Length: 128
Image (cartoon, rainbow, N blue to C red; front, side, top):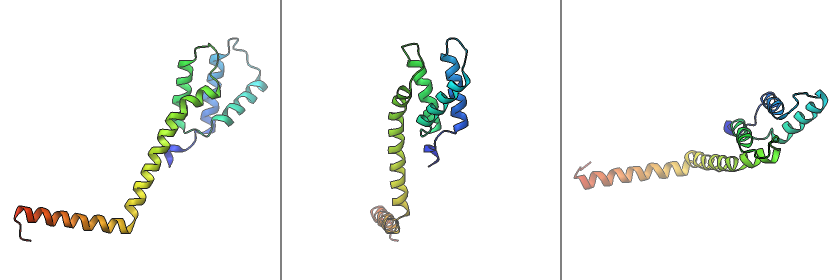
């Protein structure tokens, strides 16, 4: 499902770059150290869906009480409950889709609707 597609690598790299600058007190950046840090952070977070990742990064920044850059663990802790809820919703939708495409269940639903319509007509005095 599209709702669970991971974030684009280019977006995450840009987001992490702004994150790095925000929490770097000297604003001086060693390009090699930054590249290693950015690649590793990306590797550890890229599996999260884009919207959940964006929210979780923001949440981790807002709740960072130590004055340092939030860790991968803090970002993932913000994302995990949201991801679990989304996974449950997707599974529920997949079960509904399977039930709706099952020919036996579809025939059963049609028969029940006919029975209900016949019952409603009979109780209303409609002779059809």
